[in-house]
Length: 259
Image (cartoon, rainbow, N blue to C red; front, side, top):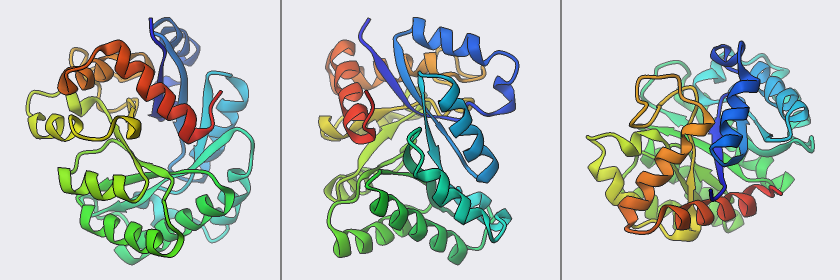
């Protein structure tokens, strides 16, 4: 079984509280050798670091997600910066922009996105980017970052945009990650985008416990299920499942410095 890396999961979620060791055992049995557990605010970022320190399969990502920006206390960002320097932490995020939920003023989202971009660059770590119904705005801010500092190291997580957005992100240096929605019957357009992303920029993820792929849609998602998404990605690109596993794992190791 060719190894896979789940580049985005929320394993601190209460839905994993009762059986996380079993979840990680199932991931290992499915060939998932590493998973990134992602913070969305200070509390979950701390939890991600603690989980990564406790479980060798895991690495942490810390940040304040755009929908949580309005809840952040004035001192939370300083603590995120401190956590981001920890050896368990391989990226900053998830950060980005969201026009779907009305949970934080858009200028505040932009401020936090700019902070994460700056932090990732200063630490020489990638950024994990959330984008929901804000593709033009995300590309605008990434373009400004690219124009000032050259390539942007990072990933567009759970990508659901169009081919033009994907191409712009790849041009600026980013990777593109696909989650369980790639497998859905209605996602033909997304599979067409996945078919043309350069192979060396592809990643796969679960976004656990959300977005469980076919054939387990409707269940709690978990890292073991990333293989379903990888198999769908292989089919969309007309290549072998083994080839996609090898390529996405190599890409994840290189981007996040995983061993």
